[in-house]
Amino acid sequence: MSFHLDPDKLADLDRAAGMVADGSLVALGGGLSARLPMALVRELIRQGRRDLHVVGSAHGIDVDLLVAAGSIAICEESYVGFEQDFGLAPAYRRAAQTGAIEVRESCCGTVLAQLRAAEFGLPFLPVRGVKGSDIRRLHPEYGEVTCPFTGETLVVVPPLRPDFALIHAPLGDRRGNLHLDQPYVLDERFAAASRAVVATVERIASSEEVAAAGVTIPGHLVAAIAEVPYGAHPTSCYPAYAYDRPHLAQYVGAATAGGDELAGYLDRYVTGAPTEDAYRKVIGEERLAEIGGWSASTEAWKELFR
Image (cartoon, rainbow, N blue to C red; front, side, top):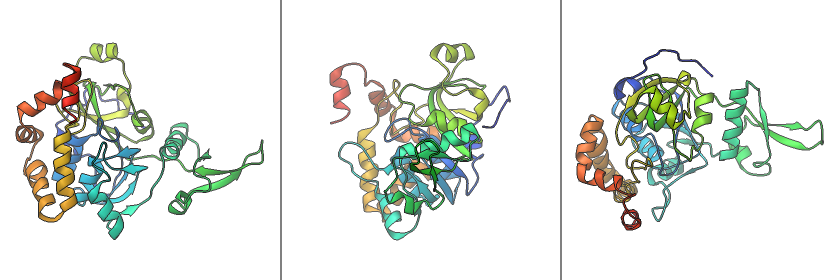
């Protein structure tokens, strides 16, 4: 763990994302279609980042979009795809099949053990779940030990220490203290194991308000924090808003088609929208209000997912 003690870490999004260099080992917070750090992902693409080594638990449009933009060289995930009926991630799948990216498939429990080893300052931790699986072939860095108590042979994994953890949170203060609502996925562990957290939040609040809500990730782990409303869109950031299913369907369609359609999506929503203010204007205030009204009634919630 590294310590970042600047009392004021508030930064513009471009400066926060600019801390991530080409070739960095980057942990992506959130999971599936929930609280993904999409504003940071879009900004990394705008800045032309390349050769990233990305790790995560189970992710979707964030990884797929970075792959589509040519930003990823190595990907370690347990799953990359979409929820409901959208299936697997098209750009990621093409890149994996053609060898455009190196895929090091892992599992959530193994990544968790590696992060804990980094937190605890240990050279390895044992895991049982991958024993006998083909995941060993994808990870020659794994080893084996004999348990001194039972004599059992166990797989051991080395510590995982990302250069940066990219996290989106509902609430944070200028010191970098972050409040997250459940589920945390691996965000706490990513934050503690990484050299620096770069965070976006829906809203910058007073330290007193964040403390009252509950500090999930303490400020000393955070190097920069940017206020970006709807920074997880088109994924959800409950309780503020649900995920934008029609937009995800639009992306999956473009990514599946590839070529000009995928390039058109990137041009309209990422490189052609040079700031997140511009991105929100393209999405439209009416649509953002709709996904923000998910809790008005059961019917309102259901309607978003039809």
